[in-house]
Image (cartoon, rainbow, N blue to C red; front, side, top):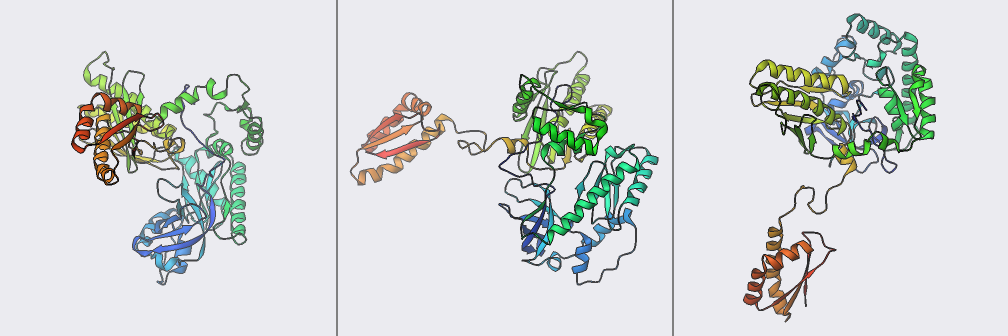
Length: 491
């Protein structure tokens, strides 16, 4: 929560597991060299897919027939080497169907796709993310002082065994070497346990999973900017206190137990804000609004002025509306867990400095509060902002809703007139069969709304069918049917 506005939602269920960052002993079921991809069975509903770009090069090079010679370029140049070597690799020579392989889930299953898998392993800690098979040091962009960045890189590099790398998180800023050492050693020990377990477990079995949702949220977010962590569960409170004592004892005072009434979510108005996050339209304080439409391929956001007319000239009015919308769009992307390709249609502005001011403001809102990486392009000639945001699991809508059985996920249903014509056409198709079996009457059960439309608006059409085909149509209103449902019986 920030200023009583919900900023993000993490959901867990006792009936479904959180797979991201989990390690499995997978079995290669299919290798497709044409698309440089292997499908790996990890014991889930769908096989996961492992692309060549997610292979660790120590394994890949050891299995390649070609003798590739690599220069000793140091850890900072590992990423360019990856790109240069990738074009010479062949998934068909690296993996074989039926073999076992250690894999990690990098992205949750989404829509009809299985989990995205990787061999570039990561283990997140409080201050660093360990990369046990990628000898590269990275650091958060939010640590801006050059001297601090250099010092942290040198300190972490000294703690890591040869062949390992790490990403230094924002929370590492200002920490002493003792805290960093404790974090790194814990992660290295976890990696050693994963490797040992791989040799003992059965195929497709889970080897290691990330922390429970409450501990994961604290590990990833607890810092100086977080004022308080509140839970209404005594059991969760005890777990959090024990966990924070180990990883960040200086913040133990921030862990609070809420004992109401009212209920915790009611007190902070969380339920209503979650319901609003499932709606297409989001209202802005100024009177404007944004429309969020999520598809499988991309997300489109449309910004409208609505009732906002402002008190200054038109250009300034539009700029203020766009600036407010930019902050809300950034919040909605976090809140709804939207990733992938996103296109935002801000209200067009003629003034180029204002366009740049809007873009800077939007990028700042993403950088300050969003922990997932995003890339934003310049505003196009049509006033569109194109961006990508890292996907992480299912969207909020996918987690909290299901496809409508009436409209089949379309979001709209046929009009009463369309439904009536469809039913009458079906009756005409049934008449030859009725006549063949000497049935003179046709019973038609309808939803009450369609029954009303047929008996009042289209009743003459029904009479014409009866006259032309010499049958009698008996219409019955049935509340048990959906609005586009019907039942035809030959009497």
